[in-house]
Amino acid sequence: MRYLIADFVTEYTPKYNNLRELSESFIYSGDRETQIRLNVSDSYIEKTDKRMAVPDIGRTETFVYGNAFNRTVINRHAMLVHSSGIICNGNAYLFSADSGVGKSTHTRLWLKEFGDKVHIFNDDKPVIKIDGKKVTACGTPFDGGSGIALNESAPLKAIVFIERSENNSVFVPSPKEIIKKLYFQTAHMVDAETAHAMLNNFDELLNSEVRFYVLRCNMESEAAHLAYNSIIE
Image (tube, rainbow, N blue to C red; front, top):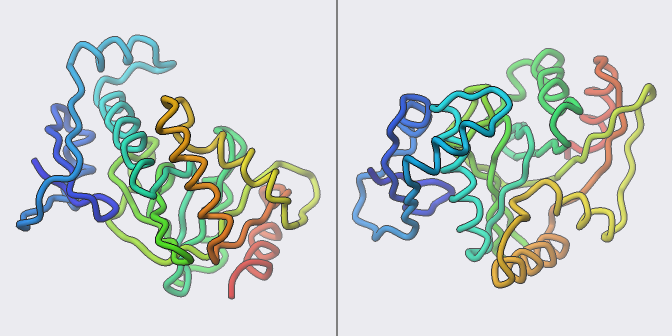
């Protein structure tokens, strides 16, 4: 099957229902040539599944194909940002954090507090595409288990790195801090050539119109209001 993911015509054949169902809204029937072919063996998926904390062959297939896609697009001025992505007023905002910190909990506070103004388009693995100053956040079918993986894209306005704290505050990190945080929230275990492309992506992103913040917060409604007032244009 062919799919249009982050505007890349991508070919792969899901075997299990999880990835097949998540990919349905991305099916592409146009006449553009295939740009990315993902070939992952059944044996590799099965071996990976045995190493997962909670084995689930369907979700493991989604995880493996997502990793393959995200490594491939690095060389095409695009990159995964491990984050929960929301769209507000037609623009995208990514909330990024290590697993377990609470990025999804935080974006659900936005749904609770701001209702129809906001929706989540991908809860774990959106991809960003960099075109000069313009950066677009794109949904992918490679979610982290929530099932929120919409085929939507929007101009990316900000990336917010979440850190847990009893008190709520927002500040702008230094370029060095941004690169460090981005490195740990993208597909960073790559070969030398791809690593060079990834560093170029970081540089282009830092020179784009995207803004960066660190949000130190608890999981109360106040945190969502502080973030909204700090980052929404």
